[in-house]
Length: 234
Image (cartoon, rainbow, N blue to C red):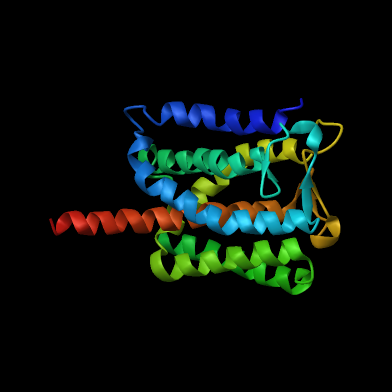
């Protein structure tokens, strides 16, 4: 149990990594755009994480850690921003490749976007004084807006894959937030969020995950489009 967070990260990564080389999936061919997308996301989320940890908005239970840390963040938290997004993006691209029919129509994708954006705005109205609520919802709104302006077609597949990805994400995050454990691996200061939980998971975690994954998808897709344009001119 002393290395539970580490094993959750590695366990989440193991199967997606191995199947990245499956001939029907070939996710490894997307590495050149996915990893830059993950890096861009980390440049945003790591400073955010460091600040929130330093100010006690959330923290980590040392009983479940290796004890190795960098800039105030446990090694396991650094790995979280690689292992979990990789597994989620693997799922997103696998669905798009093997089940292309699992997508929304353009009008339904826009409806989901409008409903989700409206809910986030309303939630911000009531929770703007809570740091976690304000930052996670504001960032998600920003990324949703950027995607809608520059590549709204991404919503057609992203919203479907995000719904599917949310199932294993809730399983892993449920353990991290204390499901089945004497104490949580990651604890939250409820004065800085709504205090609403889906089981043991703060509702903000869902929106945090949405903003994190959509950032990577948006950057990766932009890089892929640039590569295709460059290839046409060669």
